[in-house]
Image (tube, rainbow, N blue to C red; front, side, top):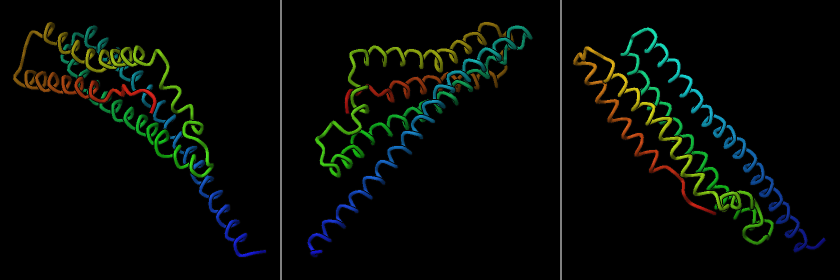
Length: 192
């Protein structure tokens, strides 16, 4: 066996090993992405269930101050939703831009044929209407619900102690900030 042939064989083994590492990285990142997607979707369900439970208590028990709990729930779970969604998008971007290129180089494949689903599903005709709909749902779920609870408290509460005014103002400010963050963090990009 010649020295040149041995070097070629070592190079092929190294490429095979790197390909295995990259494919394993892909699997692990997809697992993490899926887990984060599931968590993100559950945050909406938890938010809606909490809003329903607190609203029911506030209305039936006559404890209108309980409406002040809803904005905190919306702010905290909305923030978790945004950060989880950002990680889902970041994983997707890494897979499309970095990992696909590494695998393409190792397999000597042309751009776009490896991990192609990561690109294709972002280029359909309904992406923008879906993103607009999702943005509206996110704003209604996290900001609108919290804002509606503030309005309900303001309308139903007969006694406004100083602390209620401060909490109400802080919650309104944080809900507006959350709405801005939801708008800013929406991923409108198509393709890569």
